[in-house]
Image (tube, rainbow, N blue to C red; front, side, top):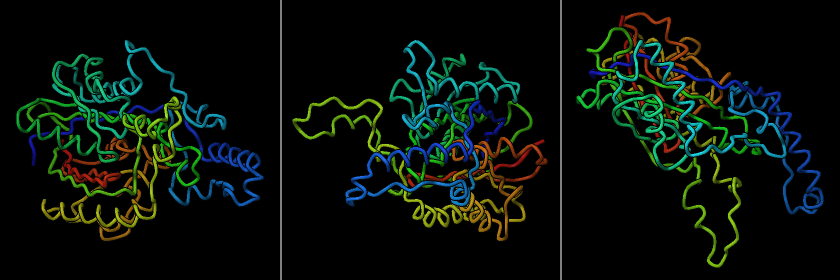
Length: 381
């Protein structure tokens, strides 16, 4: 058991939501126009026609029914198919920091804490708005926290990796309390023109307030944390600062702004991910349970990364040794879709209030890398 507690969590949800019906209608309109525009090339066999999507396909493949986004109009506009996120002046708060601050304020209010009680901020997310200055330092400044802040990226596992880092620093006496923040604008890196993935992601921001156990009452004691990584190309995003240097020598044409190649957006080999990640994560949770002397009967709930309903049900079944779902392994991806690092935190935030003192559960994240993290907790009165 560590000296750190999860004292509270915070959640910010965008106002805009896109249903599967709206998304499929927009996508199919794009497909129809594309096939009409390229009819001659398709007839000559030079390119393949695009296939339409359907609500039934999306829900069967993922369990997702809708997703929140920072901008709906840009995503559904078949001339654009990317959210409208206007550039802000450098003196203005960036959008990633803005939504992170909102989640942090929710967490602080729920714990009855102020910025003066916090010593550190870790922004742990899949996609940072810029390389530097760190978004975490911007969040720290906006909240008025005197201490330190830094960014970290371990894709969909960023939250659990951030929790362990914060818990370790608190246990070592480097901080009294730390906010781990997960602002995810996944709609910005999703290829909305790709039938196999255009429905996957949504936008959100979450925050976790960790504090030394002696500084308050209630919350969740951290029983143990584990992290694991294993390299794989099956989930990848090649967008980066070297993209502009990758053109052949002598090609001095301007780099199109906002028009990356498909592999510089989110891409994945979904079937390979499913086949490889399910046993990896299931074994990791069960091994960690054995180390902590926790049996399936001792475990009240698993708050899993929200990527795919079929994946989560299979992992839950392997962890509990029986059919599991619903209260055992709550799902939020039907409403929120995949929100990367924030998914397991949303599930914990929305589905932990009914648990009693002494109840145990585990937050578990997994994703690109591959990366995976487990955080076992126990409810305190």
